[in-house]
Amino acid sequence: MLTNKFKKCKQIVAILLITVLSFMLFIPAVALADRVEGRTVITLGENLTNEQKEKMLNEMGATAEDEIVYVSNKEEHEYLGKYISAKQIGTRAISSAKITLTPEGSGIHVTTTENITWVSEAMIANALATAGVMDAEVYVTAPFKVSGTAALTGLLKAFEVAADVEISEEQKQVANEEMVRTAELADKIGAAEAAELLARLKEALPNTKLETDEDYRNLILAVAAELGVELSEKDIESLIHLLKRLKGLNINWDRVGSQLRDIRNNLDDFLNKEETRNFIRVILDFIIGLIDWIKGIFAS
Image (cartoon, rainbow, N blue to C red):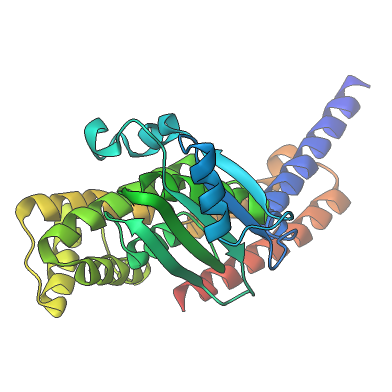
């Protein structure tokens, strides 16, 4: 009796394991299923006066249907404190933004950066893409000249609300680091050149063999040469660190596929009923085929 119960438990565990793995594969699609085109969320710096808040809302054309979220100076320090000085972040959250979900495939468009002195439209768009933001129109503003750090932090919060998704903490951190590194480079080689450099480096990541720091260094130097810009050793080291983190955001489909194949090959170790084994093998074969298909899309 106990032996039969034990066998049954093992079968249930196996089926549950496969169900969980299947669910994990489809999380991204489900998370975006409730995305509503045209939905707008506005983010306001927490330290704006009531008069300034009203001015920002009017400037961005806010309506009664738009949702509003607030960004605190504490959040700015939380996401940017590792990359820039506390003095540069400041003690008040001022810059504000509006994000509107646009049709699928339309991309990210930063239409306005009013009174934002530290980052450009291209830098904001690049950082948002790194964080997983898709298909959105963005408006960034402030009542007077500020760096714009609160706006980026706010945009990530706003997109989570608008698209009903959760951006991982790692993506947020990497997106902020990217914006900081791009802004630093902009002071040396120009805003357009810095944004283009980061964009090209990111495009090259999936299709370039990068195993050592020297591999990353060669890629950075090659792209910089294409653009005709010179980078200091400090710039290169910062970019190597950033690119490693960017590459780390990719889903390792090979690893997932390997784990599934291991489960399939070892079914006999924990299942005894042939019909159950055959049923689960069919499911695993389907999932493995799906992973191979997804890998093919990424490779292309």
